[in-house]
Image (cartoon, rainbow, N blue to C red; front, side, top):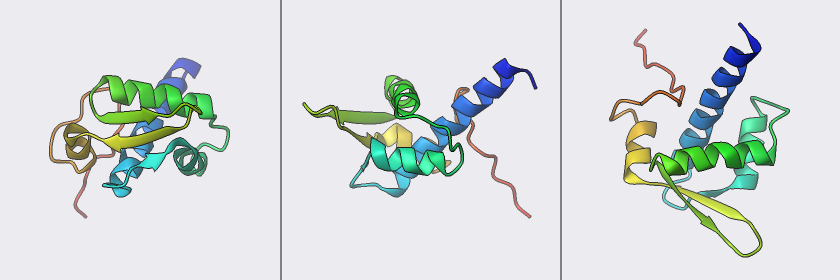
Length: 104
């Protein structure tokens, strides 16, 4: 794989980890510090800035709502569409590398 392909795969995977983690925390939601710890279990070099960049992408797609407080803390909750993507009830558009469900 080329460096560009690796970066693309990483972004898509991080987006999926963010969505699935926010789905598990529903209906309470989850903050970015907890999300960073989860993503770092897969990508130890992940940064807070990287998490926020991918959360912005998810928010722009209408899959999450982010509450930002005056101290710059972010709190993430999935929208109905985000829940549907995370729960495999709708197709997932490109940009999020949702694992395929297989029966074995």
